[in-house]
Image (tube, rainbow, N blue to C red; front, side, top):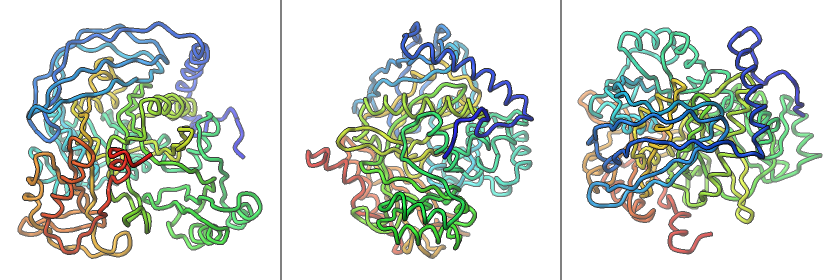
Length: 557
């Protein structure tokens, strides 16, 4: 079992910055403890009214408005963000519910100076990165976007430059590119470059980057680290044990846990390293596959065995920078490849946002009991967090109590596509503020979401998640995207042919994302677009968002 020691989980005694962080955190913790029962003074956030962005699927930009300075906010208070209603293009209402930022130290007041437009480099080639770029292009503070390497769909976005001759794994070349092209902000999409330390290499050269350090990326890169952090800082999660010996792991299942039981690789396995074993025999087979047969390579050298949780899964996202955690929104995805949530696990076959199961009360519970202690704990452990936290949740259907399934250090895919469709505020400014540890009161209260839900349906190559072919041409994407005014097709695994044609180049290939006045309407819009796509070797689930639709119609829980 993990024991409480004075040695941080990811400490580096040779790093003077780590020592300084530890000292600062000790002071912070004293203040935090002293204020758990006493409400601290509350600072009113002031600022001029900012116009709501037009429709999420419009590239029209509004002029930014100036804001007045607010007082410095004290640590660990919940800052209530006042939201304002506006009108979306076409007359539909736009609404954003109020949310709270968790503050661990002083938050800078809003700046009255005009914000400089920024050149942004996005690392990655999937649907998540396409969605982030799409929203960045609509940000008032974004000047130009570069994609490394991007994909065929990203290359068609206006003012985007795709970079094919630089590898994300060559940190020196990435740094050189940033300096040569006056990059103001690097947004790292996938988890692998973060676990590889790309953010560290960029920060060492004074390049602003949104994404955690290599040490902090252990939050996703090592389930052992994440679970130990939960245990140490009382973050609600499933009971577990960690094993690096297969025989001891199997003995533990036979004599202690029984079945059903969950077996996970500690290392990264592209979202597929989780096995739900219904019997002891299945659990033993899973242990052998992961540890002895190396199904996911070195990721299975160490495994986590944890209790099976029952309830409804959902995801929640928060942006973290400078010890301020800003809540974003919830989402739910479909992991199984087949209708009715059957078949093999995938990286995700579809998603929708917001998740109806995540009520305002649950959101506050997640921020207070999961996000806040995670950020505080990371700082205590000498690996202060900067970037997005994507919390995978299990919500008990009867008690509504929430437990953490896992943490991820990047936006989810395909959840990100639904979030970016709904977002109506300046993504570039928020990520830049987090990257520079300078989230202001105006940044907190400016985050806005459409009240309309978004649904994403993944169009995958036949055979996925097993073997599949590449190189098939996909036709009529423009016609499909224009099928309704609220549809956007994000490319996840595509490449450009010699004559500019769009070719399938992955397992999950396209993410058809649509909005509507209801989840049912948004889902209908997505499937209308899919029916117009000419790709015989593509397939999708036909029941995405069925839980949310059942709730809308009064048939769900």
